[in-house]
Image 1 (cartoon, rainbow, N blue to C red):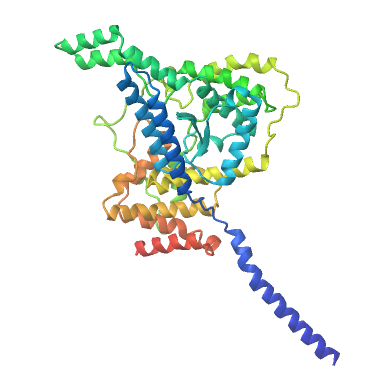
Image 2 (image 1 turned 90 degrees about the vertical axis):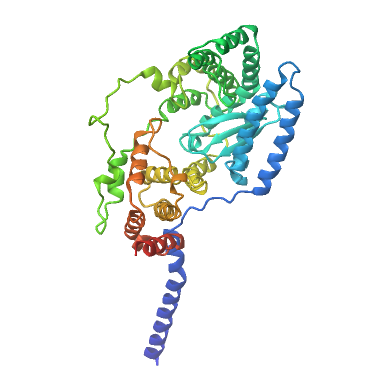
Length: 466
């Protein structure tokens, strides 16, 4: 009787364990394949913000001086159209948890600097991968995800915000507009313009020479303004409990942030050299010049620095160092707000720009960003799925004769790595896209075969590959 009872209990135990496995295994597999999903845009928030900022823009226009009013209106209109374009493209990140965190850091800075308390400011994260932050007018400061994800601590975040708050507080954009309008309407410039208009030859050359000295872009600050914003920003930062050394470490990071260290040719061959569809060197080959090669130009250090997103960083560091050393560092913290949220956002912001570029149908930008991230996270299901999705989408666009609108072309201003990826996309035939995409995804089928989004792209590639 006991033996029968033991056998029955054993059977029950086995059935129980089997049921547990059936119940737990999908969850376990799912845990192995947690795919990043972009946060949905809060369109109602974007509409509300657009209406609010447009009202502020109209107030700005109404307060412009009567003298040269049309010139002022033209520039402020251009600035507003840039802001509205950013909102229309849904570049502003509306996730509440991220906005709350950014607001918390901003409020800490503003609370320590009473001169900022009366200012009407809007600070947002931008889904742009460009490593930058900017004051764009009408009280709006954008902090690009491409910059945030490269920073090391909250104090660096705070210094970037202090720098942009300084641009706003010092009215750099408005002062630049005023100087430009005043200069353009001065007797001296108007006289020169009249002479150029009446001259018989080289009008274009003369005009370019004149405008070079007084050119204005309402969305950028001069180098002098950058140094002023550094200094004022450091004053703002010094009144908080953030680490002042962050000013130096941030500028050191920005000095090299534009460098592209990816060996794209090697990365592409490693990623897309499948057993059933081997990598072909002709995919990344480029046509040489008519004489069989290109001249090697000497490196112009001054020009190279001027083309940086953040020029003059070494000089700016030297300017700030004496102040940083003079201020006591007691009770200052690198991460006084919420380090866990900071770390979480850094990870999220590695992915969001990739998804955003794809949403905007900038396929090659999304592809290159995904390939770069894959170097650090070689088995990330989102990145792998995204690359397959891009190849599927490129094929579809080519069939619709719209691929040219969704990819960039190789150009001198691009990094060499990005140009290599662009060259490959240019060189591929229609059939190559699904073939590369399918064979790339297929090698991960065992690992990510339980992921719905992965399987969707794999099946799309399979159907197109046939």
